[in-house]
Image (cartoon, rainbow, N blue to C red; front, top):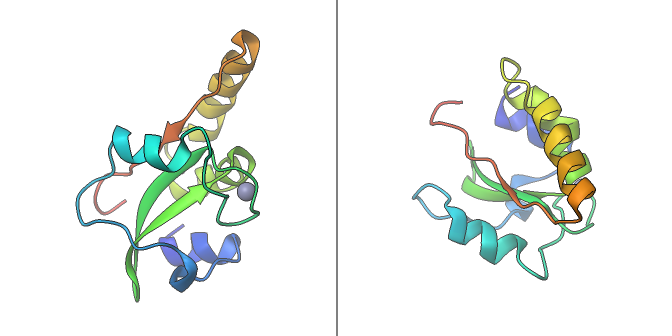
Length: 112
Ligand SMILES: [Zn+2]
């Protein structure tokens, strides 16, 4: 699924997403966006647990901050050859088992 279809599946207008820098996202970006008071999920408004930069056709690079449920609901659509949803579910279960909060930064390679 391309970015346009991903945004459509989340009922998001790329014009409503915050502009992102031209450089790749890094751990500091994730910390700033998902820190102690995380930004709201772009799709549902609950606290975001992942962030990434998407390159939209008409609006350029934009931040896509998602809660865990919205991220998992769309993860396999973005990269069907990688079992990302299953991997993240295991990570979530492990984090819950030890009582820690997990911040996830998904940064697909160029052209993905
Ligand atoms: Zn959400």
